[in-house]
Structures are given as structure tokens and as C-alpha cells.
Image (cartoon, rainbow, N blue to C red; front, side):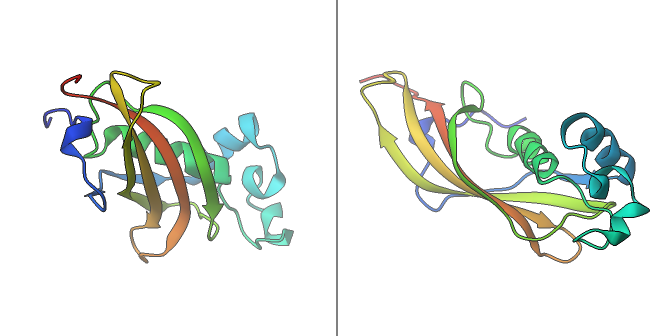
Length: 152
């Protein structure tokens, strides 16, 4: 495990990646039955007659996988992944069963704030990618609090 990254360690356009995640059909169904019970997520057979024409993952499940990849990735922000919000999320294409997903993150903003005296604010752009095709499945812009190394 690498040392934690503090706010002072970050710079604009810095990039991070992390592990890959294989999303199975069974996981898609389990997640959807609990959180997004639409037939194109829960019933592979009837999904053929849907807008998508096939079984697809919930976009919210893809976003949750993004959070997992963020936490387990190279980011390793000091103090943990403390989110202030999601500025935007866009689903670019359906995520199919048995898709291997990888996330690429880029620092797009850095600022100190008087409100959070022990933390800086970091804006990140995340692309969730299909490893096999290199197509973007979803993208998110998030705001994180990252602990300062030294308080001045």
C-alpha cells in the first residue's frame, strides 16, 4: 500500500487509476432487485424487448462500482475519500453483463478553504471504462475533501 496522498501532493491534471472490476449478470440482477427493479436489469430474457434490446446494468450500480474503484485506486487520499458532492454524472453507453470496468481519474481543481481548516478541496473527473473495448461507460465529476499535511 502506498503512503497517503495529502492535498499538497496533488496537482492539476494529475491522473490516477486502480484495479479492474468484473461485473457479472448475477450481480446486476441482485443489485437491481434491491435498488433499481426495472425488467431490463432484473430479467435478462424480457430485456430483449426493452429500449436497450439486452440485459444491462443499472447506471447507479455502475456509479457504485466507481466509488469502489475510487477507494481502492491509486488515489489513497489522506483521511479517506470524503465527498462533498457529485457535480455531474453521465451514462455514455449501457454496461453489459461480464464487462470488466476500470476507472481513470484526473484532478481538475484544487483550492484551500477557510471553511475546512484541515482539508483542501479537490475536484476530480472520473471516466469509467470498458477494459476490453476502451469505450467510456460513464463519467462523473466529484468534489472531495483531502487532508492537509501541514496546517498554516
